[in-house]
Length: 353
Ligand SMILES: NC(=O)c1ccc[n+]([C@@H]2O[C@H](COP(=O)([O-])OP(=O)(O)OC[C@H]3O[C@@H](n4cnc5c(N)ncnc54)[C@H](O)[C@@H]3O)[C@@H](O)[C@H]2O)c1
Image: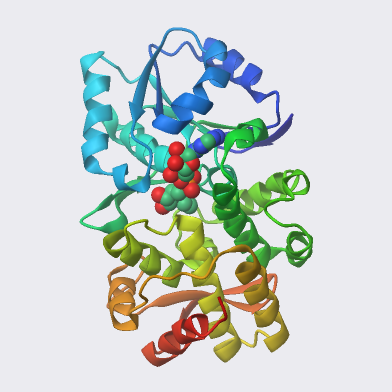
C-alpha cells in the first residue's frame, strides 16, 4: 500500500486499502456511517466494499451527470436528517466524480460540515475528481456552479475497482492523466503515448504518478488562486463543450471526452501564442484523435464563447486560459482573443474523423 499523508487529508493507494478503511472507521468511532453510491457502483463496487464496513446506511442514486443536482443533494440531506445524523457522522462516497462531487458537497454543508471519505471507482475520479476538495452540483445547465471547497478526510484508491469499469470510461480517465502529464511531466506523456486504453495492464501503475502531480499542485494552492489554475488546461474550452453537449445531445459527451477536445483546441492556442512547437501540437492531437472518436455534435463557436465567459473561473467576461509553453511546462492566466478561440475550434473541426 502506498500512502500520501497531507495536513488535512490522507490518501491510501493499493489493492489492500479497504482493510485500512476498516481500521480507520473503527478508530474514529463515527456516530453513523452513510455510504452514497450510484446504481452502477451499487451493483459492481458495493459488494467489494460492504464486507469492510459495519452498521451503515446506504443511499443509492441513479447513475449519470444529469443527477449531479440539488434535487439529489436534497435527497441525501433528507436521509441524514431522517436518521438523525449528527456532526460525528461520516459519509463515504463510493463512485466516480459525480458521486464524490455531489456526496462531498452534501457532507461539507450538512450541519456546517461532517467528515467524508472518497473511494473513487473510475480512473477519472482516482486521479482527479476525488482529490483537491472541489465539491458541488450542476445548476441551470451550468456545470459545477454551486459548490464549496472542502477536502475529504481520507481517500482510498483501489485499482481493482477498475476491473468492471467500461473501456470508454477508462479512456475518459486517461484524458485527465494525460492532462497532468502535459502540464507537469513530459516523461509521463511519453509513457502514455506508448499505451492505449485497451492496454490497461500497463496504465495501472501510472495512477500513482498522476495522483502525485495533482496532490502537489493542490497542496501549493488549495483555493485555486494561483498555480492550481494549471489544472484547468483543456478545461476552459472543454467545459463549454461539455455544457453545450449536456444541453443539446441525446447522448451527451462525457467529461473526459469533452476535455480531450478542449486539450486539442487549447494546445492549438498554445502553439499560436505560447511557443508550443508544431510537432508537440501534432503529438498531442494524435494522442487524442487516436484514442477518442471525433465528436459529431454541433460546435457553435459563438455559443461556446458565451458559456466560457459565464464560467465561474473568469472575471468581467475575460476568458482565462492555462496554456502550454511546451509539453511539461504550463503558464496560467493567459487571455486570448475570441478569433483565436474560433480558429482553435475550427482546427478541431477540420481534423479527419
Ligand atoms: N471535483 C473535481 O475536482 C473534479 C475533477 C474532474 C471531474 N469532476 C467531475 O467528475 C464527474 C465525472 O466523473 P466520472 O467520469 O468519474 O463520472 P461518473 O461518476 O458519472 O462515472 C462514470 C460512469 O461509470 C460508472 N461507474 C463508476 N465506477 C464504476 C465501476 N467501478 N464499474 C462500473 N461502472 C462504474 C458510473 O455509474 C457512471 O455511469 C463530472 O461531474 C466532473 O465535473 C470533478
